[in-house]
Image (cartoon, rainbow, N blue to C red; front, side):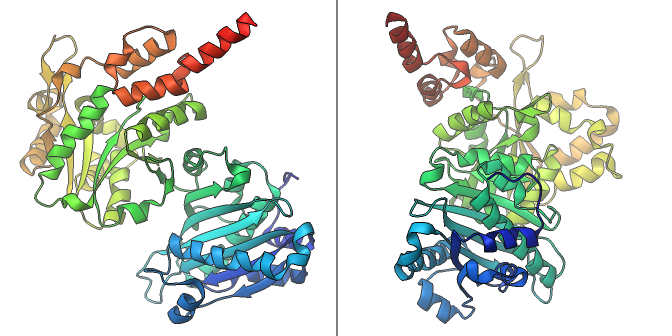
Length: 482
């Protein structure tokens, strides 16, 4: 049954307890028994809980679940789920025909006594939708923002109940996502990774779930890799040198690829960049994904397909202003070099003072973050409007600025915060992605020369951006003949 109204944590726990078909175990490490406790407190827990346990000592934990380099990580969570779930049908075979088994696990680091750490954790549920049915997994990563260890534990207990209830009673994955914070707010608990997998969800694209996390306000940023698998940003970017290209990628053109490759060559030459710890991100913002305030999910997946085909890692964010993106990345990279790739016209927008009217310190306050320690912007040239083939670079940029901002521009140039991408392929600067998209949708020939071959192949094979692919065309022809 789909949920009609929002239930409280207690009401959800009680409904699960009263359902004779739902039965399983709890294993919670690092905070306590907060999730299981909610089921005990409402009564009827014997109808739900086969077992609940904690193995806080590392030796005990390793003896039960096996060796692991870290204890608050996804690998440990999966070890816990593997161990706990297999015990259920082994020890309770007489219940299998009428029971939807589940194993819930979490491994968590709450706020320490000195309050010097970031509370976070991995939470997972292995579950069946029907008795003797296939097994599915729901895995999330959370950041806990309560400034009190006890309150973080309370928040964890609430989210755990929400996860179990959502997976057991809701059919729509987006409703499962939005229900995770029932009784909470994103100021208390942030969900920055969500994955729902298994035979019952084989058609679900978790890249779309990453988008829904950001769209629904559960986090400001989410990631997925070239294989389409969702990723946890802090794990991927921790103490790494990060280079970011923001764009619409609708579609990816030769210009996008050259911006990334040419700027990466610049970035790798920086003396404080460790080439072995370099992560390149292509970023899509909600602003670039929406049209009239609405996000076209099909269009998003088309763009994701193209970016992934080029082997790129994608960051989806709700950081419209670049300085907010830099603030977010800086917290994760811990002072490592960050590079941003901007077209020259995008840099003009960065220098528009009206963008920062909501900041008390205006443009200076935003630039303190944007051009802070170990941040550099690589500026890709463009053809000047109405000037034939003349390039628009930083050499001309100062003249376009109001006089009151020219000294600020000089300061940034003198301190190596801005740099022209001088090895850009200027022969491609005439390519405009909107024009290429229009050609694809109209069925015009010639658009192929403006995009990488892998992008061309993906567009044609999957019929992206309304391209009439060969398979659908053949099917239509066969239908007409029949």
